[in-house]
Image 1: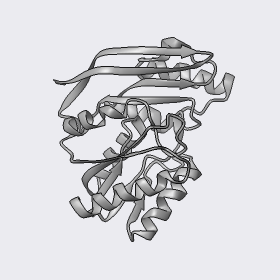
Image 2: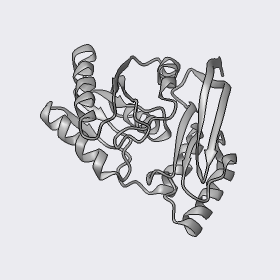
Image 3: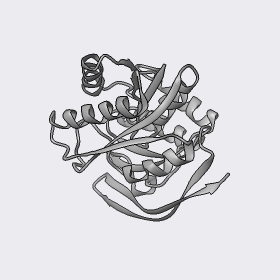
Length: 226
């Protein structure tokens, strides 16, 4: 089955893509770039780097923009999926949804209307198992957004490795965050993965941080041979 992967550039969509490739053919990536940083549906930090990730993975990219207005942005997602059907013949859509019923049900509804299969390989997966598998499999993801206590500015740009996972596990116990960031506590950018022929190197970035909220805005990045 030919699949299109909804890709925001973060760990969940890329790990879902990795899992989908084990069983089916990933024909393209689908990106909806929102102008609204508070989008209900879409991850927004550094989505301008998804084309670089697509190049690293050797996958075609279907990209559309949206104003990010609640519910209205679903029309733009539908448009993007329709383009993927027309251009790449996809028969199903892959999401990186873990717990968000809001996101999952809306994508499922669009897929049903378009007669497409909706594949959510991470849905309600065990958070600890997933995060350990992410690291062990060779995914390198950096944190590009923090939106809750107790995250400090030092987390911006930090790679999710075994040490970071230990700290996140402590935050789950002390501050009741979700380990995967699915509650909106943090966002990520994948800079390397098993399916990448090259890795992404960040050459220039800037941090914005105040009151436990911050962003790492990547200004310049390139692909580099592994």
